[in-house]
Image 1 (cartoon, rainbow, N blue to C red):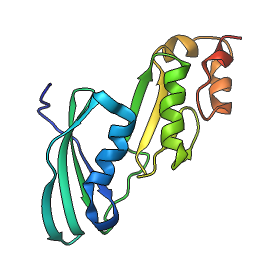
Image 2 (image 1 turned 90 degrees about the vertical axis):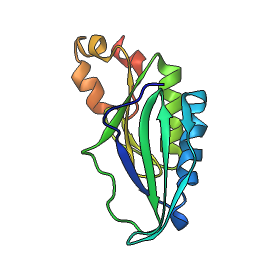
Image 3 (image 1 turned 135 degrees about the vertical axis):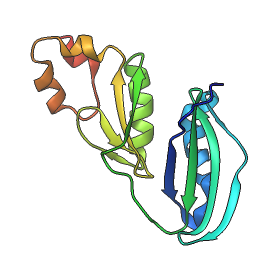
Length: 150
């Protein structure tokens, strides 16, 4: 596993500050591409009960922290792009994140914790070079590759 010199820390809010709720959610979708370390209880903080955990997603290291009281929410200034091999992989991630989350537009969605995702085909640049591709994307929420190939 790689060790990032700079490690993004994602701050969640869950019932009782349980970071296990977060790790279980992402482990469920990323499977063997998700590994987490031990949960570190930080106890009572200004955000209420707080826990943290280091995780690796596709071999990239992140720190996840969860507090019982909401402090700062995620917004569109931070999103993670998932470069998918095909429509099946797009559907897998999109359906999971929007099941308890929200569809947005142009391949963007928000998961149940408020984290933003861009679920995109890895050949998006090639698809966007096709005639009318911008108009197609502006009409889509989930990216449907076939619509660019017509």
